Picture 1 (cartoon, rainbow, N blue to C red):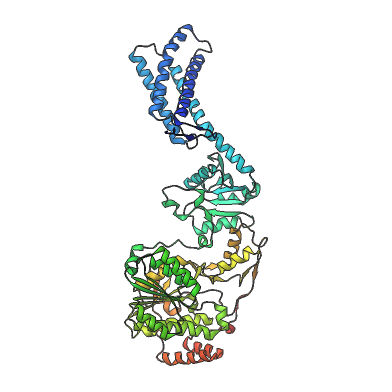
Picture 2: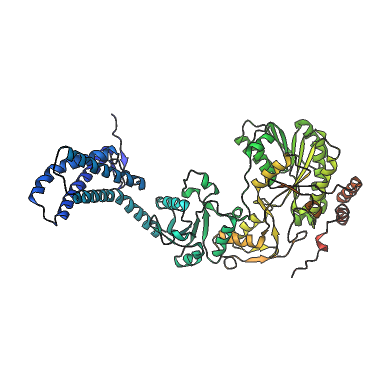
Length: 630
């Protein structure tokens, strides 16, 4: 037995499409007949002359036949009461206009007495209006009901949309038609003067974005949805600043909205994050260029269980290397990374090597076995205050560990060696920064007599890394504060991990020079970042969450630089990559390194710092710095 197809009706009933179409046409016929009689009565002041009574009896069947046939021909008898739009309204008007023209053509062909032109026009207007009402009224009633139910629902969030353009219109359209949406939109704001005072889907455009604080207070708004594609970080920070005294949450449409074929849903909204606040444009990469550099190459990554190393592994794995060797002392994170890569790239040979970069013999065996062509050296101790307490460990790992990995790369004939460095290596005040500057000098010294091309890539902080302030601020905000900042004037360069790694791959493998510096944009004030993160969490800085200044920790500076004076004079720029030529290591570099190594092995903290000072004249231990700022 074949079941008759059914379709869900708006009222919850299930009726066959054929029956529903017949009901729609029956109502259309009733409307047409009523519209004709009303038009005639209106034309003749409510009194129907006897001659027109007979005329109507002959004209009405013809008009009904033409109108209904035209509606069927245009497919308007199959009507979706849920998703009807302006396009369907236009088709309805066109169908009725065609029907009126055809009716008049048939009447004149058979020499029927013409109806007064006013009757024809009034009938067309009444018919089209009433057909539109009965087709769109259920949809409008449903939307009104959903909006009212949403506004009264427990947990409903009164919402304002920032942006009344195409994106805001599409977002509002989806919000109003999503029954489970927790956001009750009360209106929109937009800086376009032509949109102020207008309505979108029945919601008012209140005014400019500057009015947002007053509107949030007046309408008890708890959610702000930013619907302006590719809104600049400056504008986002401005919006956060406007609302810094109000407890509101923020969400934003993705930057890729422009490329989504003009479609957007509430599921695409995501929370504002620190990445949205970076004072520069997002970096776009030429994936074909990366593929040409990586495809078919044997690659080894040290420190692959860390934030930078793991992202290097993920990005190069996307470009079909011949093999990928992941080396780290952290066995747990290494295990999880290898599983992740094997699931995403089942055909890629991935090897997990648990090893200490301070063990030269172990590294030499790894190099001999896997013969890497590219070596990315990301393993390092990076925590500034901890390395101040254990300077010998920073030297053993960051300096001699780098020396060991570089020797391995040289011995196995690697084509390229890429050292991940830091802006703290410039005029270092910390042991960590000095050790990374010395690591740059180590590979520069080996490069002078090696066939391997050695490159150090220097950049600032990355958002979201294990040691950055962003995870710390998030934890402190979740606990209810306070948020701790070292100094109100402290600034840092920031970049996202994927951006930094993408540039590292291009800079390190592109053959641009021995020292590459990534263009990090403008430094960010840490205090402003903390306040913005509190605001993004729907809290008020200084009221709900306090910001406490703790003072600079050992080895820390108020601000970082990416280039020294000597390097600034020789910089070149390419694709956010600056290429610099740093001074060569001193002639007695090897002897000085050996003295540093002996001091580190002996645990001689003072000896380590004095040896560092001798190797790096610009190194000034933090305890010798005097902050002259008020």
